[in-house]
Image 1: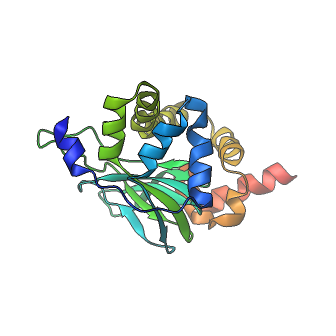
Image 2: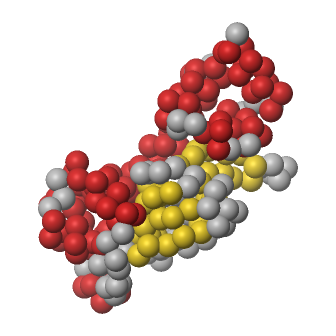
Image 3: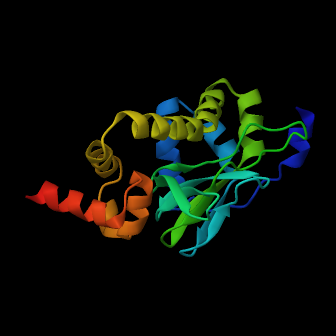
Amino acid sequence: MFWVLISLKPISFKMNKAFEKFKQYVAPFGLNEADFTTLVQFCEFVSFPKGAELMKAGYKQNHIFFVSKGIIRNFVLSNEGQIRTYGFRMENMLVTGYAIHNYHNEFRAVVNIECLEDCEMVKIPISALRFMQSNSKDAHKVARFIAEAHIMDLVGFIIDNDTKTVLERYENLENTFPNIHQRLPQHIIASYLRVTPVHLSNIKKHRKS
């Protein structure tokens, strides 16, 4: 793992609210203070405007992100050029989307990821996670969870789409992402639910009646 060591460069950072939120996020994994301090030495605070693209499907991906403020979505483009939304991320959630490394020892994004609002995030190098995974028992749990998170999300989406009604998926979306209907345009939510905006409008009217 020596190549990981020489590829990492500490980044000067200020422990702002974004890092404090990230610290609270990883706390349940039992990450001790020393390991957290080591990890964030390689992270940085970043901000992106609405519409910014964090990852592009098929392209090399070296980082993941922790959302301190804002909301993003994972999506792919169909053969017809239509956007197919696969998931959302908002405050206190991780933004991942890379695939298992290939024979070139590179990570490639499997989905496109874009900001749907102005966003503030902690940028986390994948190499830092791999280093922590190899050098800390507690950090290993965090790195493994992060590596598996996006896979479980995609699998969950596929299973829910095949086994639950549109109304059930609508209600799950509301429970997972409070106030999402006030923050996003209806056509984006409809894309996630695989319905038309008109159908989504009817669902919302039905629930209010």
